[in-house]
Length: 331
Image (cartoon, rainbow, N blue to C red; front, side, top):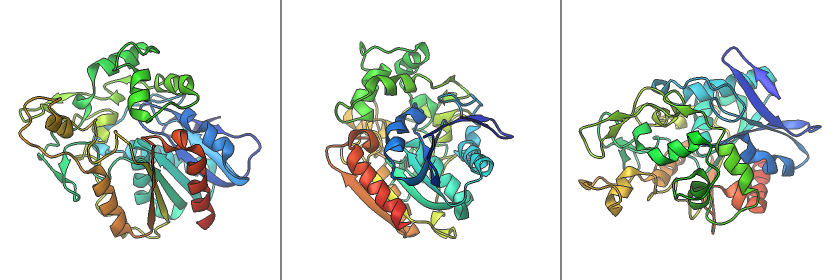
């Protein structure tokens, strides 16, 4: 269904005939609500599953992203959607970038949500450009993060709608090599969903800005990757909100995207010699940063799935559903 708010028109996937406590699923970067369809269908009776396409993804409006607001363009869209649909006590489920968006929405309006589930979420200190569990900036301007960190061949193939696996940088190859740790059913559907991403300076990846410091890129003012840069998105004070609904953090042990040694972090790639000229900048400890923020928050549980990468809901669906269902019932 399509839901129009003062901000934009958003596409929301539903399961026909389902009623009960609303569970709102939020997808990650370069994806869409299609990544949640099987999970939604398997959700126990008594819950009403909803999955939104974020701005610039799927069938929602390709509204521009003001990166200087961090992830607030996305979280404000989400809050308006909640207001429009009118459900009380929503359960939020956010995957990858969607995990950061969910936390931002929780930070802005904690009383609206009954529970939160984070699935391989980005760090509360953004993606790239930070060191240590406290998320301190490697450089004041966030060098090492932002749209300039995107692989230009991947961006070009995404724009061209490439369905092949002829290059390691094709969307299909990236799905196989990074989104999941092994084969999953429905690959074509997920690759096609990746290709719904609106590519450009206002959406994905955003405007690339160069820096004199290694690795030569710093956040711009527009687009998705700049919105997730640590100069724009930081959640230092999540533990101060009231009320604090319970949080379940689910992640795969073999995740190569969100990790303390992420293959998408330029600092770690520099340590590996993939990006030359590294002055020894340490990798961003994404997991340690999330754990530090949630330790202060208090009401959370971390669940790690073995033999699983960045997409537990696709790779280990039965275990994921068991964990999610238990969390919803406890909440």
